[in-house]
Image (tube, rainbow, N blue to C red):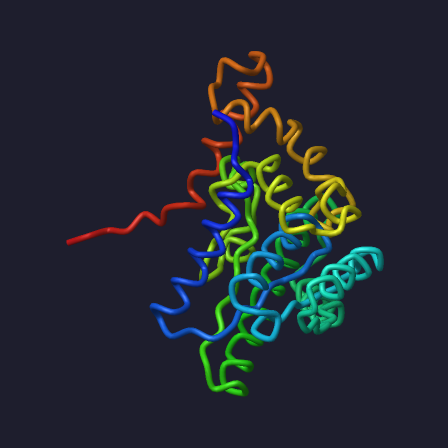
Length: 251
């Protein structure tokens, strides 16, 4: 079945608008990474709520200046406010405390370091959400920016980018997000940029070991991808299921 990007773009905009009206909400706080997902989400919220009710946030942390430049490209295009919260010193202060616990190797620290950054970023977004709620006297929400492919293989940080208040693109594959971005006229430099977390120095696909197209094809029908790739995707999906459910004892 072909994907109607125009129709789905309108549907998501109406979904956001209706939710905000129903719950008497005010604005949105969006972490702007300089990539297509946050660019598309910013476009959707600007269309749904108006640029005056959207605040984008850049949160550099030992990251590339190009990402911040691309984030500005998005905010300039849509006209919403962009604030910068440099979390480098926060990250470094945290690591300083970690080193007091012992001498750890780079390989031992790698996964903790990569996941610490999005967790600090999420704390930053929620701090600003509460702040701008108080300043503007209307409730702000944190907008999620994860797409369907990322979510299927668990490519997100528990307690980091998994945390948000509204999720507009979680049911769209990467290719579908790009098509929605084309409707919203997201700047091409951002929309077609190779996806990366801006934290590890690797592209998403390098880290995953599979392409987003493979993941989308697998979701549609696992027979669409070759056996080796199929097994990789299945393993990623199954090994990350714990991120979605917290086992809870009930009396």
